[in-house]
Figure 1 (cartoon, rainbow, N blue to C red):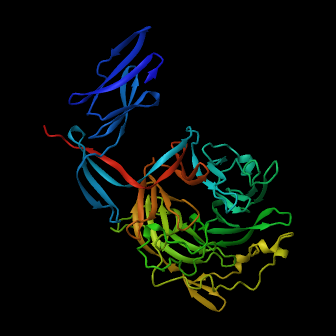
Figure 2: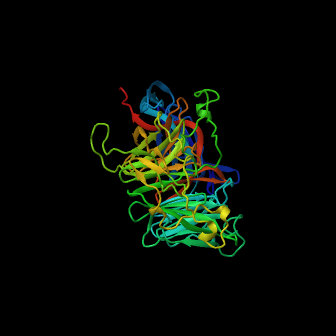
Figure 3: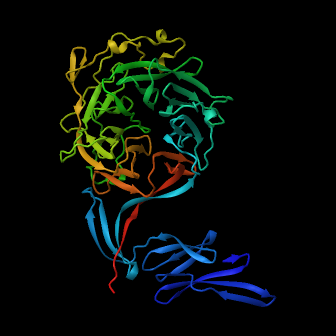
Amino acid sequence: MESSSGLRLIFCVDAGEACLFHLHLSQSGPSEVKMSVSDCLYRCSPLKSLLWTKGGFIAALAEMGDGKILQIKDEKVWNRSTIQNIAPVLDFSLVDYYVEKQDQMFACSGVGNEGSLRIIRNGISVEKLTSTAPLYEGVTGCWTMKICREDTYHAFFVLSFAEETRVLSVGLSFNDITDLVGFNSSACTLACGWIYDGWVTQVCSNEVRVCAPTADAHPKGIQCVHPICNYWMPRSTKIILGAVAHMRVILAMSQPGLLVMLGLIRTSSGGSELIEIQRFLFGVELSCISIPQEEEPFPIPVPAAIVGLVEPGSAITLPNGVEIGKVCVVGTHKPSVELLSIVPGENFSVLAVGQISPQNTMGTSFGGGVPEDVRLVLFDRLYILAGLRNGMLLRFEWPQHESLSGCLNSYTMPDKVIPANECKENIQATELFVPLPSDAHLRMPVLQDSKLALGKKELPFPVQLHLIAVRRVGVSPVSFIPLQASLRADVIALGDRPWLLQTARHSQRIAYTSISFQPSTHATPVKCSECSKGILFVADCSLHLVSLSLPLYLLFFMHVNLPVNE
């Protein structure tokens, strides 16, 4: 290695153990070279090769054990980290991990002093693309948004704090563009997202804001100096939860159990506004809301992971009555998970319920059973995932002998509907959800004896979901991050550490795969020109943009040194 004082060389002598020496070459005259060799600077197991790297670091690779990252500083060698190496594997045994068709390996690795017992299982590595300084303390939520539905890449990255919101540009650098997007920068964001091409929505405790960003924020924005913003504000109550989907927003209010549905309308001037189209007193306080969305139309193709496990020509279909864009999933303080209809006029009718017992399988009571997050997912079949505040992850499925036949398709709209031209001036009726007066919930059908009265017809529901899997992934609240807006998307479960949920390769079950990244409080998928499969993690008050490395590799997650016989 060349330095200002001459040439330097690091070399290793194998004398039963590796001894590292530092050789320094300098020119003392026109034709005279001076050479000096240091004393042994470091002793370790025999090494295979040495490699200089930037910053005075040295990669020391061993053939029969772990390598090391060393650093020469102040004429001394410091051990900074370990390069894991399981060779040679002298013996191993496979054990099914959590009875989920995911074998983990117990391996006897290394020789001599490097002998160790390794436990190895499937894992996913991440390539860290960029990290910021620890400037983001107290993050309460993060999201990525598109500005148009058909866009390949995300347009904005939203960070929420206790009393602040920042909108950043998506990419390897994070530039603050909050003022160009139109979001309220002095309020905490409860939910946000794309609502219509060119328009995005922010849900705060005191308002719901719909904004058209400028062209300076995104090339598809409006050609104006300032963004266009319109507001909807609740009366005599506050918003505690929200979810945004195409042309509508679902809100849970501070009045326990009160649900409000907002619809987006287009004005004759080309603008957009939010109006209240339905409210209903649900009767139980909600803890979380999610609206299933689908970027691609059905039918959903069977992923390669389960090709050959299903019969040719068979299709994975949704239960009758479950239609994307017409349902949402909520978690309640009963506690329970429930599938609700969000068709205007159906009064948030309950289509399916999954009860969460406050006792485990041994009959012992446990606390924190309230859902932190819920998601509708489609793997080998349709499931509802529930992440609880006590670190448990639950999976519900529809019973085979029951369905939601006709719950949505057989619904008959009420006779009295306010026409669009009477509801609001200068509104295009073709782009308006069915608007209802503020007291419409007092005159709509209600649930009675587990049946919905639809004229003269009564349909038995809600369907009782079956709890088929319970798994503890830590003690922290569990939240879900789908990698794209699709039921078929792989899902990251955040808790004490991140896990990837995907279709198992050797069965039609859900596989849980550990992601080799530090514990994170929040995360969101990122698609940009520099990273098409990225994840933005918030950890240690810093933002970390990483890229998932697929396919799976073997992740070494436990290393136990073995005693060496004298």
